[in-house]
Image (cartoon, rainbow, N blue to C red):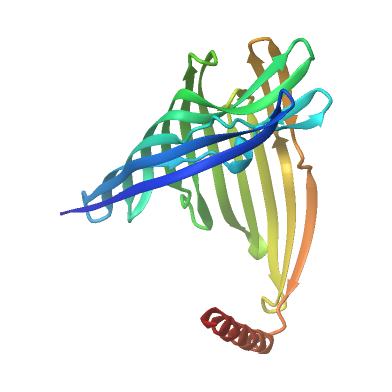
Length: 309
């Protein structure tokens, strides 16, 4: 037997943006109107195939509004050669989302998703050859399509091992005749998170991921990877917990490039660093927890009194 869920939302909104500025020595005002009158439906159908295996399909229609900051037409300079500039002509983006899921015990393990966005809000990066300045500005790109395929699996293959792993395959496509944008890229991300019980009751935990690259707007991101692991053990009747963590042992951050029109640039952002952390946590008993719980209850009651007022 299947289950159907559906919803319908109607939006009737009117937003006016007023800009006052000097033009030819005269104070001038312009009003940008943004009326929205649209229906936003959503629906899903789910069905059990066996006692543990199920399937579902869903659809939704969504809106993404431009932020107030992106509508501000003024330029904000980051340095003498780069600036961000608002766009008062930005319009909302509308997306049709489709998704298919296979579930095991109610949890999705395989997903296929597709989305098609009209007038997607896209950060355009361009260069002015006369001034050698780079400008970043949000614009509406006519067409954006995304495919994604997800597969997840548990890692309890042997005694003492727990966790999960998965892969995500994505295709991103941007096309605009107005701005001369034609970008398309496939990428794969593999991730794992696991724990294993070692001898002498030492708990080993590991998490990591690897990506072949991605498309972040105009930026074509290179491969990236990350690996963390730790060792933990309890002492003194489990009152003392000791954890030794090794973070960012494999650490490849955000590295990409931009090749658009007359501008070519390399982009790198990697604020994280390798580090080793030793943590000790001691539990003093239930009496402290009870007192703390009582104080929390009193605070909750005080908050309810304030809310009533």
